[in-house]
Each structure stands twice: as C-alpha cells, then as structure tokens.
Image 1 (spheres, rainbow over the protein chains, first blue to last red):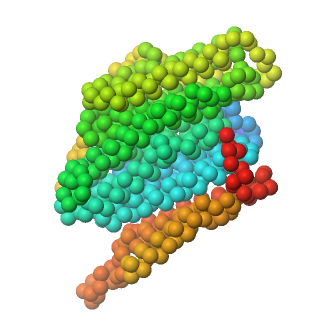
Image 2: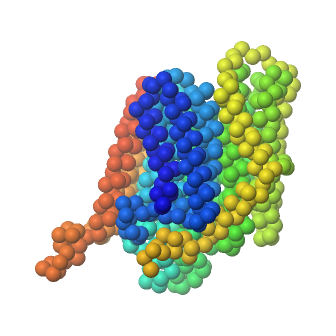
Length: 511
Length: 113
C-alpha cells in the first residue's frame, strides 16, 4: 500500500483543519493531542514499512513520475519524520498548559499543525516546486506564531521576518524556475538523472544551485543570514520558539542534504569554466558551505557568551549549533562520506531534542519567577528539583557529556573532522564546544545556584513539566541505547548519498 | 522579446530593492510585493514567451509549437501564496501602526532586542 507515504501528511493536515473548526470547542486540547498521537502512529507505521520494504513512493493523482507530484519516503525522510513526531508531541502537550485561552481561541493549534503539515510535506516530497509550497506553509504558520504575543517587539520582529522571507521565497522561485527551464523537469529524481547528460547547460545550473543554497542558508540561519533568528526566537512564545529552533530550521538542513547530496551531486562544472572546470558543482557549493558553517560556529558561540536573558542565550546558541550540523554536511558534499552525513544527522536529532527542551524550560522559569533575566535569577534548584534536573540534562546534552545523545553527536562530528584531517575545522569545532560549555555552565550556575530569589508568580502546570520530561527522557534513552538511532542515521545517510537508488525508486516502475 | 522581458524584470527588481531599502514601512511592504510579483513574471518567461496555446495548438493542422503550460500552473500557485502573504503583511502593518503610531523603521532600530 503506497498510500502509507502520505498518511502522516494527511494526519497533520486533518488535525490542522479540525483545529480551525473546533478552536472554541471544549475538548480542542485533547483533540490536538489525539491528532499528534495519530501522527506519531502514522510515522511509526511508515518507518516500519521503510524498514521492511525499503523506500516507498506515492504518485499523487496516479500521474506517473516525472509528470505528476511524487511523494517519497526513504530512510532519511523516515528519520526526519520520527524526530518531528516526537518533538511536536512534547511541544503540543506543553502548549496545552502554556498558551492561554485567548491564544487557543485565536487558533494557535491550527498554526501549530499547519507547521507540522508543512514540515511533513517538505520531508516527503519528491518535487522541487512542491518543496517550495511546503516551505511556504511552514513559514506562514511561523509568521503567525511570532506575531502571537502582539507586543510592539513581536510585531516589529514579525515585520522584518516576513519581509526577509518574502525576498528569500522570491529567490527560491527564481532558482526553481531557472532549474526547470534548464532541465525541463521539476521532479527531483528526473532532474538528478538529466544532470548527468551532456546536453544540459551547466553554467546556469551552477549559478541557480548557488542561489538555492543561499535560500536554504537563510532558512536554517547560517552566517551571514543568521541575523533574523535571535529576535524571532526571543520574541515568540517558548513553545513556538521550540518548534522553530528545534524543527523548522531542520527543514532547511534537510533540503540541503536531499538536494545537494542526492540530486545535484551528479552535476559537473563545464570544462570551459574559468575555475574548477570539470569538477562537480558540489565542490563549489562545499566551499561556500564550509566557510559559512565555520563562521556560524564562531559567531554563534561568541555571541551567546555574553547574554543576560535565557531566551537570548538559547537563540544565539541555536545559531552556533547549526554550524556544527553544517560542517559534516560540507565535508560530505565534497567527499561523499557516509559517516559524515550520519554524524550530521545524529547531531541534528540531538539538537532537535535538547533545544526545544531548553526553550520550554525557559518558559517555565518565566512562569515561576516572572523574568528570564539571568542576573535576577538564582537558587531555583532548591524549590523545583525536576525543572533544574531537566535543564541540567538538556544543557549538558548540548555541551556533549556522555551518555547523553549530544555526546555522540559531538563525537561523530569531531571524528569526521579528524578523518578528513582539516586542522582549521577541528580548531573551530573545539572553540565551538568550549564556548557551548562555557555559556551553558554559566546559565546553569546563575539560574539554579546561589541566593534563592523571591518568587511572586507560580502557575506551572503538570502538563508543561511532563512535556519537558518527555524530551529529557528521550535525550537520556537515545544516548544510552544509542545503537538503534545510529543505525537509522547510517541508513538515512546511505539513502541521502545514493542518487541511483533514489532515481530508481521514483522512476523505476517506468523501465 | 526575451531582451525586452529581461530589461523589464531587471527594472522591476531594482525598483523593488530600492523600495525595500526605504525607511517608510509601507514602502518596504510595497517593495517586497513588487519583488514577489517579479519572481512570478520571471517564472512565466521560463516557460518561453512565444508559441501557441497549450493543447489547442497541437496537431497536424498547426505548425506552431505550444508554450510550456507547467510554469503557468506554477505561477498560479505562487500568486495564491503571494496573495496570502500580502494580506497578512498588510494587516500586520496596520497593527504595527496602531501599536507604534509611526511607520518610520529607522526610528525603531534595535527595538526588537
């Protein structure tokens, strides 16, 4: 049954629509949670199918590829969906407790689910234009989430965020339209096949793929396109920041892995080119990617050091962490190394678990004490043990302390850099790791130790704490039982790098 | 024809960029709308600007090539997305004005920190 591929997408879409209709209904929280559990079940079903039968495709409307829109679920998409399902379930539960009545009546859950829908579509689509549409769905819901509080700050941030992304989307359209004009197809598998042929003019392909990379760099917040992220995360409610920093940023990273490692990896710079003639287009992209990733680690780490608000610190930290994910991807782009891709994927999963957890804890601290200013906080560990334990585990997973998942991510990324003997990259990674340790320890000491401050507010619900606990348990469990996750990441990396298998899965029925 | 279109696209892009760099928030919004519409026009030109209507101009009686219909379908989708973004952006600008009583972006520099 090939329809399994789109069941997660449909589950999210149906929940989103029901959330609009039932936004004033008494049981809308239960409804959205049920939708998320259904989504998780659909993703698990899809993953078990991928495990037994290999990659699956669904041709929308029965139009055979490359004429119709193809949905494809391979191990890479499966891993990304599993990550999305787990994290969104926790954030959903947290939102139940955190978001106030007014916000829920305005349709908070609908935006939440449209975001999940867009992400699911982006992970499973096999069509370049469809990817653009899915990106827009994610963006639209994130606009609403950033503007949610409606304060001066959040409106100003949203205005800048929307305009920036309109420019980004226009560039994406230009790149996609150009690639269609050059190759004559939008189907990613067919495009990969056509790019090997001599009659395709490679000069525009080189330029268009570079533009497209800049768009994805904007979406995933690489330096010099990182500047939107900190204000957006700081001024949106913590669950929305958790979704955006934890998941929707990863859509951009996924798109880079899928497009540059799978689809464009066959393209070559023409012999007549003044530089790098005859080498793969990816060699050029990798230079861009590596430079940007190195700068991201440096700048993100440095700017996180001296922040007084927890949300601000976490925002800059999430800028820097994206650099850690992109460095192995850049290495894989030139070398085609499977270990490098799986390192990036493991790191990505680790970050997707730890960062939302930290953002949600910053929301809890705000609720307990009424502030997120590190200078005015202290001694929380004495009053709320569970929250401080959760912060401790999440923060030290980000730092890379064994046996947490973050340790394996860091280990694999460092191993990749050492195997490829790039001294500069190793030094940058070390610098990034040290800064992470420094700012996380600083936050931990300032917030949870020292003189206890007087708390005036306290409205933390059990649901919120439980939601954070889900992520913390996942961080610990996936670290201790690392083997299954590692195998999934290996399979996903293999799928990402094997262009032939990808083409065969999508177009195979025709031959 | 292509040269004319390329010139028009270039001019519109520069107009949009110019407007986005203004201090007045409304102009910035108009500039971003121009850019997103120019991307649509560009997409149309990618399908070739000459040729007959798709499907109708096929067949033995006609000797002209049909234009590629796919970019036109893509543009329709992009227009709808652009429309939704515009609606959101305009209502956002209104709320923004209500909240700040000014639309001069320069005077709001650093307000989101």
